[in-house]
Image (cartoon, rainbow, N blue to C red; front, top):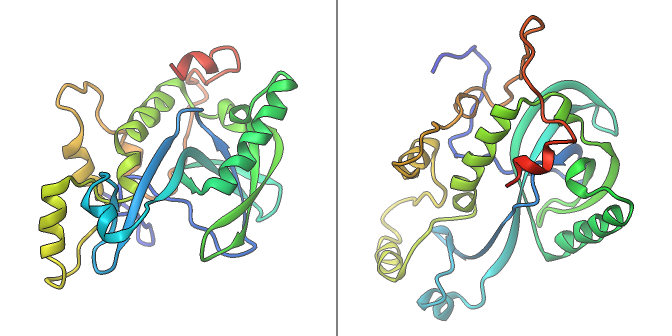
Length: 241
């Protein structure tokens, strides 16, 4: 992969949105399809997905997290978007924040809209637990920027890899082996991009989009002479099927 000095990439398949206390970012949900996970944290191992077996006997009830596919905009640190660069990320939230977003979505649907058609100002109120507040800013700007083809690529990649962002997927046998390895060295609990590519179904005809293996904040450029077809309000719902 060619890059410029100073560029940074993530080792993980999908970058998770992590914020400092009082930090503000502007995001937009790409779909109503989300990921719901139950995980355990094991010291010296990391997070594993609950398989409702010995993991619960050893570590108690799992933690429930909700994963939303979002784009993060360039902003001024406040309520203003200052550029057309889009960063594709996973917003991981707990039950309280999830209920907050559901309430906002219900209100918007009564008004003939929905949360996935709006931009959101996200403010971190607790850095340790990543608790957040959400304010609606306006209509989702990304649909005037992102092409249909890239939208489909991102959604397919998210569907195939989002669950792994939360931890290692194990069964009873692999869990036993993992515990036996404790103390033998660091264990990576989230997949790298190369590992995620190998995990994609062999029948998939669409490769992982290049922008996800490129620098962390790729700029989406639409040539003026051959404009890409963007995701409009009319066909937005169709693309979510």
